[in-house]
Length: 191
Image (cartoon, rainbow, N blue to C red; front, top):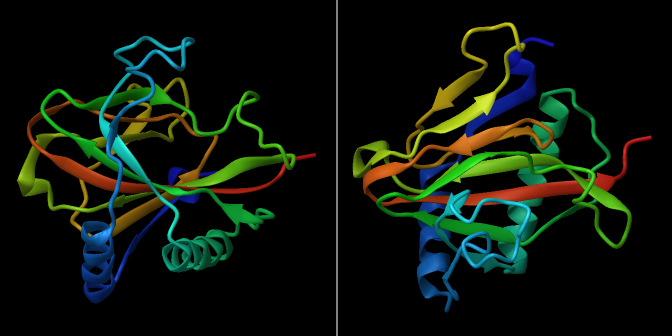
């Protein structure tokens, strides 16, 4: 596979982004510090992730993103068996906020119904001129390549979909605030 096969960038219609923004502002979201910082994921360094987040479970938003994920799955010819979408994570990265290299899919991330994350999505919810740093890196090149990742700092409304077994990170924000929505699409464990 070449690196473009591992991810797909799409732009969400500006009117739809405004509706999403309005829904988020009208929700009484419980924005909390990252679980990693609270020590609940003890296998990780407490500074592995520095951010705040809230979970969005609103059915119409979940359906909207599920449908887009299914389209991208087909467009990329991944053709994964996708059965569901998890609650969407609204992430806020202020000065010093980051999320070091990690995978969204691992042998430890199974669900009670026997499914696993197969596709991940990050939707940029503000423009890159509103914050410094906060670049999104996706490791898509072979180990012998000097730089193994591709860097993205996309405009508001751009979504990057990628396979959940690819390492990725959010670099530290040095000023301003970076906002994003993250979704995970899951299905039966690979056989």
